[in-house]
Image (cartoon, rainbow, N blue to C red; front, side):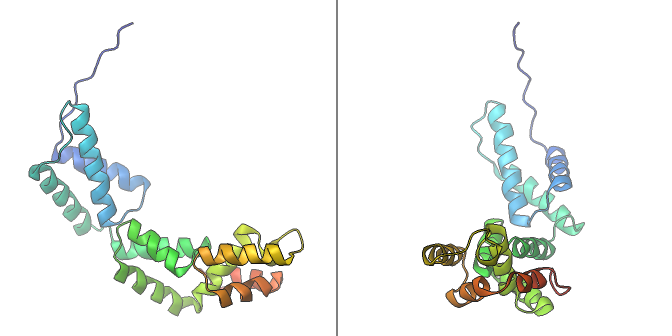
Length: 192
C-alpha cells in the first residue's frame, strides 16, 4: 500500500482566522499567547509545504490583522483573561509571585497581573492566606495530613511552601491552624 502525500495547503488570512476561531473555541487566551500560537501554526504549515518555515512580513501582517479583529470583536481581552486565570490559580493554591510568573508566561504584562491581583485582594481580603490554605489542602500538609507531623516533616512542608512562594510567617500560620478553620477559610462566601 503506497501512501499518497497531500499537497500542503497555503497560509492565507482565511486560514488564520479559522485557526483562531478553532483555538478560541477551546481555550481562553491572551493577545500575546494567541500571537505565539498563530506563529507556530504558520511555521508548521510552511514546513509541511516544503518551505523553511520562516515567517514573512506578509504572514506577520495577517497575524496582526487577525489579532486586531479578535480584539475589536472582544474575542480576546487580556484583562478578563488575567482575572479568570488569577482566580483559578488562587483556588489551586498558587502564591502571588507564582501567579504573576504564570501570567507573564502566557503573555500578560506584569503591571496587568499585579493590578488584577490587587482587585482580587480588595474583593476577598487576604488572598495570600486563601492561596496558602489551598496549597496546604492540595499537598495534604499540616492539618490535612493523615499522619502526625514530626519536626523533620514540618521542616519539609515549610520548605515546600517557601519554594511555592509563601512567606515563612504565613506558612507557619497556615500549618498551625486547625483543619476546620482552614476549611471555613477555603469555603467561605468571600472566597473565589
